[in-house]
Image 1 (cartoon, rainbow over the protein chains, first blue to last red):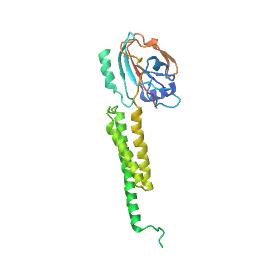
Image 2 (image 1 turned 180 degrees about the vertical axis):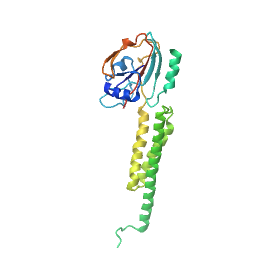
Image 3 (image 1 turned 90 degrees about the horizontal axis):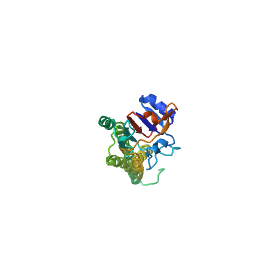
Image 4 (image 1 turned 120 degrees about the vertical axis):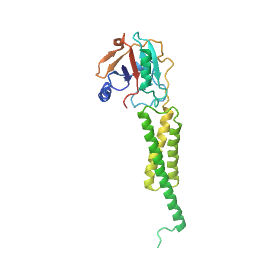
Length: 94
Length: 146
């Protein structure tokens, strides 16, 4: 599992200790990865100051050949799907 | 000698109005606070409803109650909860209106190949997406800690 957000590596490290996620957690301060996937939020930017933008919360499954198998995206950041949605997708596609 | 030259009747009306205003201030805060607690509870359970009209209505009710507290001239100790209710009752509906997000139509879609990327990991080392080759992967983009 890989996570991407705009936090700095230091901030991610703090969160990693707190939540003990066994994931590769990447820092995308300049939104390079977000833009490579085309996931920058073009709506109102409600992020912290000094940040260009934020990704739209998105989960996706990539097959072993690098093909995108499944995408789940939140249209509204106050609403996002719970872990069960990802579990169903994992069972279905992998 | 009376310090206040206004007729006794007017004073009485003002006092009653003050009482009503103060009560409205507290009522406004009550509605705002309870709605906010319910909101955060739902957020913790990742269960904010798609249709948030009830939340919006309750927050706006608190806002209206708080404003009428000032119209009815609340006492100072009713003004504090009324001000809090205005902040809460105004902020949450505002945050709902700005929470919609859009991505470009060129965004990643099912069937496409994952783009290659490099990024710093939590230890400050470079991570290359090439290391994911041959492995099924779950990738999550999120809004960060703040």
